[in-house]
Length: 216
Image 1: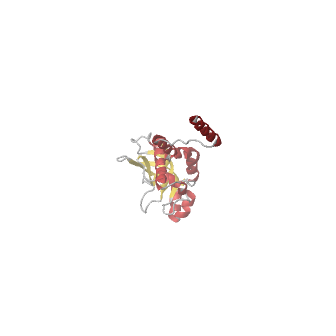
Image 2: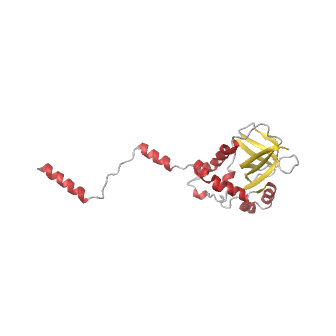
Image 3: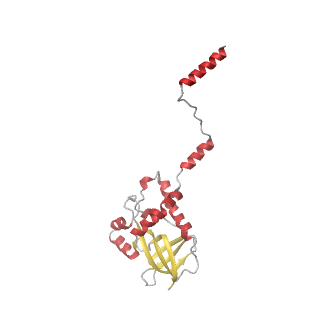
């Protein structure tokens, strides 16, 4: 009889508390899976904006190399507002979106950070260096985009990963397929970005688009 009464009491309590439910404690594996699902994915973030925002933004605001260099030499801040990202971190250098077309006068493929020296004005001397990877220095593409804001990221690590993901994107999109031999003497058409160089140094351009032509 006592057992029957106990069962009845238990049923009555359950009926009186219809909103109560047992919450399962997640296992270590489930916690890890959830953390991975919510983790920051810089490559996916770049992929999501590459064709729809990044490429159009750089194409729209890029000035020709001579114009941008003259503007930067005259007033770096004004040039940065026009060709770069006005919302950059105050301590960061200005980075400019640029277009150039010229002749390749030298190629450095001795290191993984390979570059092309490009003569734009036809005097036979290099006016810019264009990075062709696979190792790409800096975060110029990220830094030139005027719709990107550091404050939208959780921390400096995510910000750095986001910048690196742009370099990986151009590598996989077109630089990896670029021939590394027989480039000298060919023409090249480039859209990209570069940070303000130190005095006497050539601008180091990270391309967002690059097209090879024939030798001239």
